[in-house]
Each structure stands twice: as C-alpha cells, then as structure tokens.
Image (tube, rainbow, N blue to C red; front, side, top):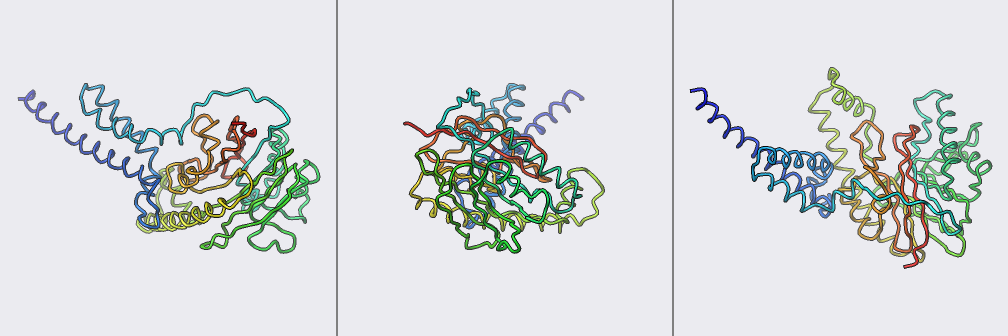
Length: 377
C-alpha cells in the first residue's frame, strides 16, 4: 500500500513542478519583450524585465533539476534560455583582460552618480571623509574626463569639490549645469570635468521632467573633437518611508507598515518612472543624432540592461561593459536589489580597451571607468 501511495504522489509532484516551470518560462519570455515594448504603451513587460536575473536563474535551475532526474522536460527551459541568449551577455561578461598600452592617443573616462557627496543625513566629518576618499580614487585612476550625476559644489565649504578638482587635480576645464539655477554659487546637478579644453557646451531638458536632463561638452583631445554627453534619466524617487518598508522586508524585521499600501506605492512609482524614461530615451536619441562629432555618453539610466531604455540606447551605441568588462558589473549599491544602471556608451569611432566598476563606498552608486582609443577600422 505504501509503495502504491508513493507512486501516486510522484506524478502529482511532477505536474506541480511542471506548472511552476511553465509559469517561469512564460515570465522569462515576457521579460525579453521589455526591450522592445515601450512602458508608455504597456507597463507589464518593464516589471518582468526588472525580474530577468531571477527568472533566468529559476529557469536554469529547472534545466539542471530535470537533467538530474533524466527527464526530457529540461528542454523546455533550455529552449527559452537559448531564445534570449544575447540577453545574458548584457548582464555578465568574461572579456579577457588586455594589458592597457599607455600611449598618446588613449584617454580614460569616469562616470559617477555622487549622490551629492553625502551632504544630507551624515555628520560633517563623514562628508569630508567622503570627498577625500573620492579624490584619492581620482588620483589613483587618473581619468582625463569625469562625468558626474548628482554633483554638489558649495564654494563656502572648506573641502569644496569644485576647488579640489579644478585647482588641486588638474581639471581646469569644466561644465556645470544646475537644475536649481546655481543660486549663490552652489551647484546641484550634472557636471563634466576635463583635463582637455572644452570648446562648446550645452544642455537639453527633457520635456517631462524638471530635474532630469542631458548636458554635453565638446572636448578637444589631441586633434579630435569629441562630444561627451552626460545624462540622468528619471529616478524612481523613493522616499524615507519606502526605504524603511524595503528594509523591513529584506531584513525580515517586524513589519510595521501596511503591506498593501507599501507595495502599491512602490509599484506606482516604478510604473511612472518606467513611462517617463521611455519618453526621455526617445528624446535623447533624437538629440544625439544631430551631433556633428563622435560621441561618448555617460549616465545614470536608472534602468537595467533588460529594459526598453537600455536597448534603445544600445541600438545606436556600444556598451563599454559588454565590449571590455568582466563579471556582473553591478553599479547600484542601495537598498533595492543591486543592478547595473550606470553606463558608459560610445559610437563606432572609438574602441573601449577596458571597463571597471570601482567598489568604493562613497555613494549609493559605484563609479565606472573605461579607457578608450580612436578606432582605426
């Protein structure tokens, strides 16, 4: 009787696991569509795209699971994974590390969301330590061009970043653009610092945002003029209550928040940000197409490599991480699940010879750097 009962349970478990497998397969397929379906038209694929890494791993688990039990069902998830094979390489890379040849034509670019160098909610000594830690990193990396998102400069501070960069570190050429107008000499916004001359600069304001925009500086490097673009796409704009709610969930602490309201609020903020970025990326591409010069673009996309935003940009630009990076390349170090949301992209006039994410704890983002040479092809 016990043997008969066991035989009856096994097919039932198989059916249940297959149902779960089918759902995960469907989820992975929908996550692929996030790259082509604008969140303006349908928001659901954007959320599934956000879950791509977890859906991929879950389907990979089922491939291994069914193989272990010698079931042909392993082909189900394997086929779905192979359909989106190219998507894997936007999330993880195994490029061989080439020796970086130092020569006159090479230059290094850094992109960094500085989170205002922690001017809020920390002690004064921590702010000073953050700034000096950043300058230590700059002296080690020696980038020729730095693109900042959420840059902050206050000339009344003793350790002002503007002074430290321009007067003490050789970045004599700069482009500051403040979404608040730069009142009293205090800057809060996008910035580009360069060791090479800036011959022209401008900004492009996204029509659906007052805080998010694009700036560019035309920089003369040796005999070439290069347009360096720096942008910050729409943030999710989570507030203190949202982060507390996330912290309670991820740390398994007693939840003092209303689950329904907490999830609903984060859902609507994500949905609005997805929709706004879809508009902003299309406006950006139209603007960049007008450039008379080769382009290197840096920015905080606030979106992952599975997103509509990323794939629109990657349709016309190369991704330095994909071409020359290694590992997962995660750049966000905040409370939400860690993703690669900070990018350096470039057109076919250049070749990226390396890409690194610098694991320094001075912001909720990690800086990214890449070395470039002009492409002779």
